[in-house]
Length: 490
Image 1 (cartoon, rainbow, N blue to C red):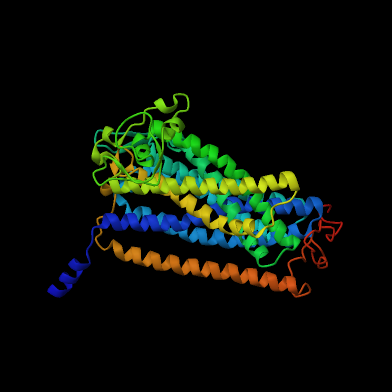
Image 2 (tube, one colour):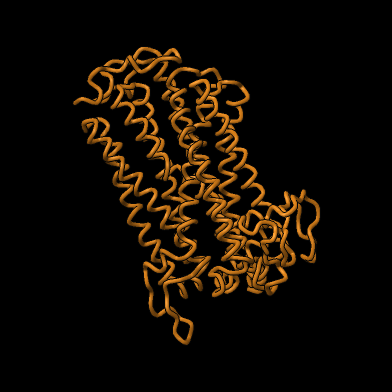
């Protein structure tokens, strides 16, 4: 008996860091699937529209295959999202007990969008062989709308944690009245939601395009791969330009409304004007100065408020109580994540500019090995950029789980064996991740085999409004003339 008690005591840990680590791991894993769930349907519809409108057999095949890939990632996202839902109650019971009545409002709305999306994903895929062209196309539109709505709903919940609103507390500090619209449309929600939705199209576009860029590097230069690259890369190229503007506006909003976070982002020890933009670098152990890095004089002040330029005053860490802002180590993490996000975002913008200039002057995208090599890495870079942005948001809010109302340490479970669920979740996610990659690779391999043997059973060209016979092989410069004349007119 004494040995058992001793073993349990030895296994007991401080639950707070383990709860934070588990939540961070599951969020970082799930967020990779979110952009695909939000944006892939839109890109599928672009291909589907081109197939119907222009009789494009390659576009039709892309739309069919993308819809099936989309279904797989949607299903996996449902699994990882369900785990996250349970974690709110298991890891943060005090938070949910205190704030669930308000925090749960956006998630209730997200549930409606999720089920709508699931229903129409099923109809869209089922309808390939059963619906006429345009009715089938329109069944895909609700998927796009529901994907955006679901993303906005979840971000509204996160924004509420940064800018809590829409509730009334009694004398005991309990939520006694909730204004759903006030919760959802809190001050942080508009820009945060826009930032995430645009990011979904950036990441989704670059991720999908990177697969076809890699294929072209391996010699697959046919029209199918060309179109598979152009559609998602064009979407991402437009979105990254929009994102740079949205991100700049959001940074200025944080400067005005969340000064503790902004002081960490820009490594500002003391309140002052003429604050430099420090590339890399870190706060010293005492948090009173900046070590290393490359300072660009006055740039942080100028970007914070161009109307006052270098004279813009930025509140430093000395303006806030030490326990009301990120620690020195957390501030260094926030600043590094900020540099990664801005740096990679700028790199992706330059890649998009290269692509756009090539279209402007040559009416074609660059086919050089350099461009395709960078494009094949753009998907991974965009994911890292998005992850870094979430680090800035979440770590920058520390020590609060509900800003200025509840601290993280007061919200977590008291279960000292929480490390067990952390290990279990990591193993589960590894299994799900490996399985997902294997399934997607298997689908891709099967599709290539079908392309090599056009007459093989199950060839996906055989659809009601698609080619009744396999289209002639593409030569890399075709225009879809091999598609049947009946496409889009039934």
